[in-house]
Length: 546
Image 1 (tube, one colour):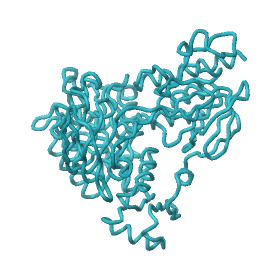
Image 2 (spheres, helix red, strand yellow; image 1 turned 180 degrees about the vertical axis):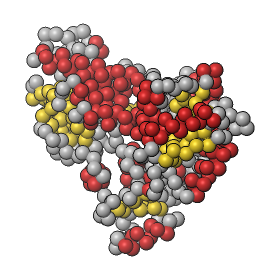
Image 3 (cartoon, helix red, strand yellow; image 1 turned 90 degrees about the vertical axis):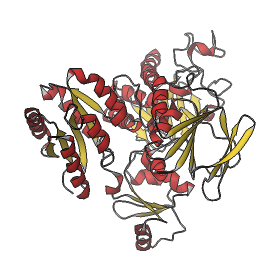
Image 4 (tube, helix red, strand yellow; image 1 turned 45 degrees about the horizontal axis):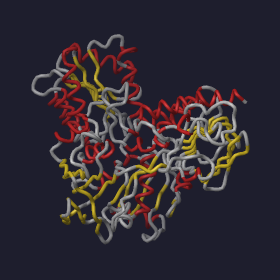
């Protein structure tokens, strides 16, 4: 496979030459630099590259071109290279056009002309985009063979996808290579899923801990005691990992499934400060995880916390595998889960048509299908927009009479503009039906019920904090969210110190909570990141007080 392509497009000859020059100066050793003088010519280039199975990493395109604008070209390019990073070059007067391109063509960044000096105004942007660009999964040597309608296969694929591990998916019924590979591995088709590693090792029905070891994730702590242990690697936990490690604390982050939490499954975050074109939850997770590890934090995956006990002034955290680590300070950032849909058939069809969260694997599996999304919040709206890229028809089911009180306006506007998304108000799911997979839904509107064909149901209703492991040690409210600071009472009952709890501190000195798991938290990614950073500051204060 040859080097990935960087494609520059501009109808102005001198500008195109300048772009080519700057791209070659920086990237010629690792990428091919290709130029085109119009949108039509550039589409022809992409078609030829696709026929040769070449990788295209980045498209750098001028907006004002005769015949086809940059936005129109970038929108058309998505069919050929959906994973390529898309950058629009604009003049100052074209800023509004660039903003529209973010919505219409999913542009990842726009640059204003002139970009001199490139070391300050061009290369940092492109370096960042290229760092997060990944080759399509089928080019990887890791292979997963399974049944598309198997809950255990779905669990494995979801684990790999959420941990940003590329793999090749071989569906037993539709891919003839799947049967050949099983025969070569001398494995029975009744023992699925099967994972074949890069070095040819065959894992039959592997547990996630074994999978994590084989794909290079850290699964065991290097020490028995840490200055700061963080339970959960969502935005709050990852922020604490970054700030704790960067400020010299020995830091361990424990994550039961994959870094990023619910934010990591979000297809596009558009209202996060400093990212005007938005970014995906996977990109945010990748950046934060690498940043924390670079500063020296350990991140264990999968590592689920089972309980804790006090050995004053330390807190001992027990994992489900029986191992324990001692924490001088502990941050509870275990987040929330979506509540399960309590209707007939939903539990039996979970993972085979009924899903909690929407990732790329689910989107691809249901390409061209009829899917339903339950919920009226931002997560449901983002999922509907993401799934509309794959499904022929997306229906958003909302119990209330509108979305205004529960969803951000920018999402409402995009949903209303989407041709493949419809919204049904005052409607809820009354049942899920299917023999081997989801086939139909029973919907209830008022007192009327009806059955509709359905390929998939994505559920985003309510949130339940993941705090059962705190029973008997840390105080929570009647819904299970962790109480902190002034919410513990003035003075808190049974508080052992002469000074009151610090903000974000729980009923146990030196144990803090941040993010969605905390009582009264603002359910936003930015606030979770802020609380994770604040918790480290308070951890320093509590450690100094000892």
